[in-house]
Image (cartoon, rainbow over all chains, first blue to last red; front, side):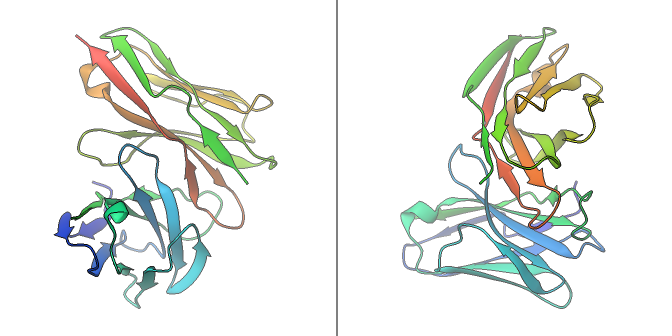
Amino acid sequence: DSGVTQTPKHLITATGQRVTLRCSPRSGDLSVYWYQQSLDQGLQFLIQYYNGEERAKGNILERFSAQQFPDLHSELNLSSLELGDSALYFCASSPGVSRSYEQYFGPGTRLTVT
Amino acid sequence: AQTVTQSQPEMSVQEAETVTLSCTYDTSESDYYLFWYKQPPSRQMILVIRQEAYKQQNATENRFSVNFQKAAKSFSLKISDSQLGDAAMYFCAYRRVSGTYKYIFGTGTRLKVLA
């Protein structure tokens, strides 16, 4: 158990809908990362937050957005969902942004768009 | 931009034997981290081993060791005395030590362990 929690575990929704994925980082971790893993692919970086501020962006679609709240949990919002958005979404956290900090991954949320 | 390549989509190994998974990467930086992650059917990402580029000594963790060839930009994972529980997807990942700390992952190698 990495200490990172993600809810829900599974989500099934229809095209055009909007969903929110939630991530609680490890206690004390300030930095949160979101990754997308499509079927049997590697993880693709979406976005990073550090202490409430957006720190870095990857190939995140405009239909997707995220935020990190004062209690440091983070939410990833996916809207106007398409079939191709079906994937496993991982959240990872680290204590900060030091060179030596590695990321600890949550169990992921599996999103199925039908 | 940095890239990570895993050219073996699938590998098989007999139980108790040794297997090596390959990873190459491309970067213009001299200092970085490299990782191997295991993803079993549960889909949890489990850190297997990490290597700091400025350290010449190859990292080892019990039955897992790496062969880090910095000049060749190669980072292979050797699993000794393979066990059935080693069956999983294995991902190689790269991370910078400055700027954004995102991981860049390869496409993975599926390891099958044969009894």
